[in-house]
Image 1 (spheres, helix red, strand yellow):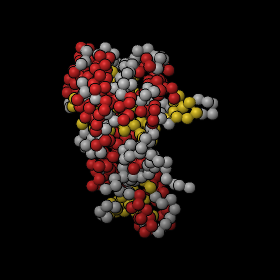
Image 2 (cartoon, rainbow, N blue to C red):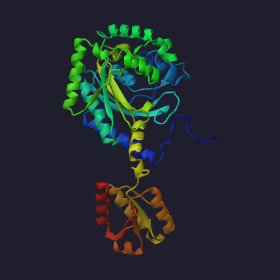
Image 3 (cartoon, rainbow, N blue to C red):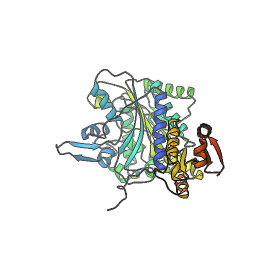
Image 4 (cartoon, one colour):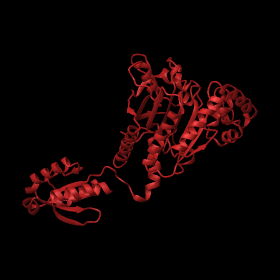
Length: 424
């Protein structure tokens, strides 16, 4: 049997698993600080949900969805994104939910595609949504949440790019102008867009192919053709971002190609990732999505940040620090001989009750083998107990990186390890 995980998926073992879990924890901390509450939707949804929201002509529906028929004949899809399921759940409840509905989720998504570093078939996202609020303040707060998360994740330099794609008032005239431009430049497009650009012309502007990017650079810009209401909204978003101390770069080719997206679009890019994968996350306003699902007009705005890409950017910044393990134990308790084993177990319990992470060999082994286990576990300290320490009620505390050690009262050893963890 092949013991590798399926292509496009990863086993997250230590230390990678610990670093990913730390990102989950950080995302939840930041979201809660801004008043967002956790939601969770099923990994499986009726396929119709994504066909309606992503569109039959989108790459997600045509190429990337994991879809199958269950034993009851229902067509189901592993969720490729989180926004549509959350909006579905909000509409399905119908009443009793606070408005605006400010929620976050952290979960696994699936999209079929050629696996690359930072772009897997199974991937993890931090997702924020504000449903029921159409003003620019919601756009700004959503962006502020993502910005704070990326700063707190210590991924180094990144850039916020922003644009507006108008709404049902100003976009139809722009779409007609863009289609006319693309017809005149059809031969310069890639094969896929050359054949299908009229179905969804704004997707060409977001294409990463060099030929399409050259055409997009010359194409008419929606930000120069906004109606008065959309222009006012966009100006207010940019003004309030400055008040938040967030610098945003106007990027006219930054679009969302589906009709239910309106007004603000944004994306965070990192120079520490490969050029084709520099986006670590993005989002925008989707004021028409609820109506696509048969609900009443309900504005919304949100983002999704790819945690694998955040992790990769972090690794590229911290690669000189070695393989950092964020879940290594504070202490590994070592018993010199079999006779002190009751004391070893008691000390382990005391350390854990004091809030320290502590491990031990579970059964007595030679001292050399126990110290090897402490080093493999990546423990910060070895807490060594021999007959002398057991009689005196002390421990020998050894800092495993430096090798320095000292016999201490257990309470003092706990205080020293706790202080060291707080500073490191």
